[in-house]
Length: 157
Image (tube, rainbow, N blue to C red; front, side, top):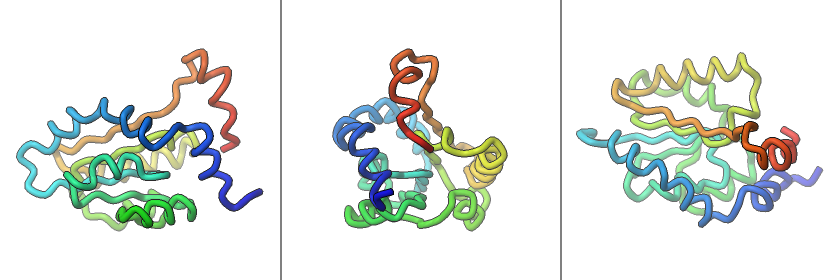
């Protein structure tokens, strides 16, 4: 399999950077609300992929980090100047202090992991979130006719 397989897959089927950044705008008001009264918010994007979410927020939230394990995605994000933790998400979160993160996002990643790992991931997310922090998880809905019959099964993972 080509070493750039997953990056090429994302480029083909996820959409352009601009289209993804525009779609993610639906979360803007929630992010802005979560930052009210927070002096130095910290954002962690788990499974940051090509870094569209980081690109959307890194100027407004300088303490934004992506967690990623795919070398091609890491290289792409770092070439754009984003802060990336090269690690498994659970291991990376274990290194963070309890209550130290304002916003955690996970876009289109949890459908790739087994239930036990998902539960460990969620436990670590809730541990590192601040008292008023938020966790946003987005995953494809197989109840959507187009997703369930066409695009969901294109991804072998």
